[in-house]
Length: 112
Length: 113
Image 1 (cartoon, rainbow over the protein chains, first blue to last red):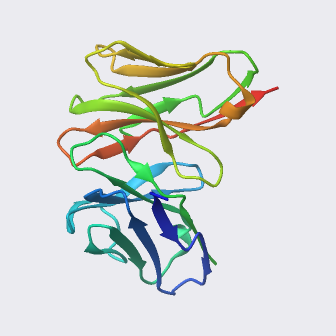
Image 2: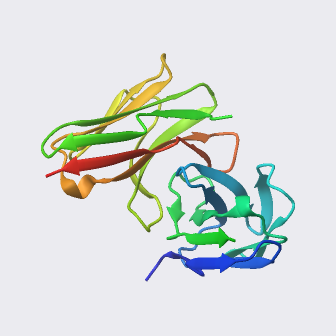
């Protein structure tokens, strides 16, 4: 299936831990994103990568570090997790200059 | 700062009724206005979109109305069905960014049978 796939779908962890969420797309897109959706369903862009280069960083704390080994992957690593990091994180991809973002199914992170 | 304002936060409509969701923006650099539909446990998916050079776009039961001078746009769902129950997000693209979409706060639509 052509899609944007994220792993894990659910992640429960303690404060202070470090965790990663992986994202892969097989759509041939050259731009990938991470969005955070909080408990009120508000979707906020965190990062965007175009051809492995970071092009947007919307004042996200530096505990969050995106890593893109190639055009098809954009992983999100989070250090020293805090309670406020609990949210659903969505990966998305698009063709640069095109209008449609394709979202993954989301990764629900719960920090205890 | 909320770049796209959306209302209402939640909406309950009887089956067969019309659902209307409204959005407003200020940034004149926005050049593309999509609506995304999100079902529980899923990611948002593009539903319908419009560019500011047209005032209306219709796809099946879904219509976007766009008022450029007022910087407002709305989604109308005709003959609403229980299967339309989902969260709807309006969005606007900043043409100065690389497809940087700014989303509204979402509207949870419930269509009652």
